[in-house]
Image 1 (cartoon, rainbow, N blue to C red):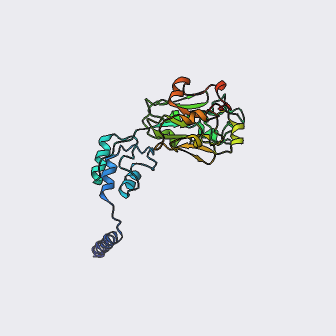
Image 2 (cartoon, one colour):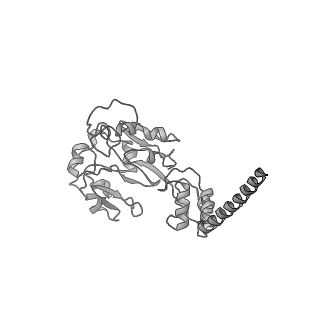
Image 3 (tube, rainbow, N blue to C red):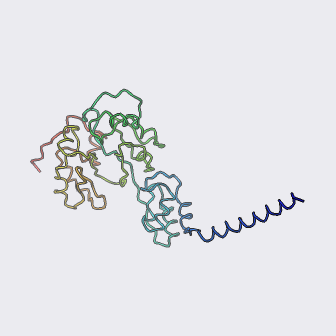
Length: 284
């Protein structure tokens, strides 16, 4: 008889607590916009971070909140962007293709070395040892951690600096996340100009550390007719929404730190030591 009563009370308590939990769930429930799940399903589920958000779900939430555009995914195609726009009830936006760009030109020949590194071939490991062997705190360590993390074989290291094969790059953002120096950026695929430096040091310090570093002289900003260049601390940054690809910034840069698609075709993905340093631009 005691066992029967124990079972009865067990069932009663179970029903009471179950009802209480169901009531609490209803009272404290947080409504989730169903569009978030629909958009997340439409996204490629790469969770690469190339859009600037932590993953596809975070991007979906940002789109629903109006904080990100429906074409914010750099990996997605036009069909995917149209599907997301339809979910949001907005006009479809074309996908904007991006590519990874290593914002450093400090090869082993051009960048000053603090010490001879003879450890594991891993940028994270080297970065823990006084920031790596290069004197510039924002210089490419050239040990290939980005290469190892690229699933498409789109990166290789040349003379101590990583370089991207644009034809293979899908802008997944894995290299961006893997770089301990945060010097790999996603820029529009058709961008014709970029500043190959992200140094945070003053010009005098950068000049000592690297033969091709930006010294924040501001000539590119002053001579840009489109107003597409700003100084972010001690380094020039291009606004691709304004850039007209006129090339004036390349002409006036005394350090040859601003690259163009033309200069890359003529010289390759890295610059020779004999072509850099403080260049005479008095003729411009």
